Length: 359
Image (cartoon, rainbow, N blue to C red; front, side, top):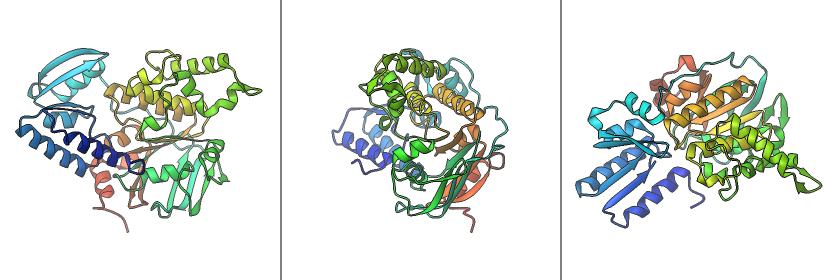
């Protein structure tokens, strides 16, 4: 199972539950890692189950999906029920306002993106996992979106850059200096950070927020082999406040936090290393609209402070909202690289699906 992609693991988990012939089926973010084709298959299955009398509770932050398949909708916020109503009587903006308690901006102010020297350069990279002659540049203070469908090579590129998959040929430069990345340790020493698409891979759930925040940079908090707890507490408190983790308790076990706050803890862990390049793979997967807006704001703040950010996403709206430039992957190659102002949701999907792939 551990060799399957997150999407494949999700499908196996759904299949396992269906073998029990349930009378009531609870689906918690079932499409968060699925491709459009796999989502359509799941929806067809839901329709068949519903026609047999199976009751379905469908938990999702993807409002278009909820509007498509739900008869009634209940909005929860901060552990309380805000409203329950027929889906036909509520609009998407109404749902967003009830979920977050305020209006949420779709776009965020951008600075002078890419005006600094390149902080990350990838030249003609190839890997045994299917990447072919990948060339990409991320400038200081720039947010570059890496868009593509599942299997296009987005996560494979992130894993190669972080030393999790071998590099067959090509060159990686950080702040103009060639670096040899053969392991995650090499990547961290070079100034790279990798937030995986499954946040469970980036956290140790029985540990506290403070222990998770300092996990990738323990050498900064030890002296003569002993952990300096006060220094760890001060650093974790700083990041908890900076990223607005709620509740703001560094001593609380991370497993008791919501998905959005867990994602902030993962970001804090890598910020604590002093990384200059952040590779974010689906950073808003499985978190609510309000938490997404906070993550976007954090990303823009980090870019304004000079970090180079490679944001991997399968949602064109997300890429267009927060990125300065977008590169589209198709079958292991980057086939389009352009300013985000020149892109649309339709053009991104057309290229990513192979309908308009340049020669």
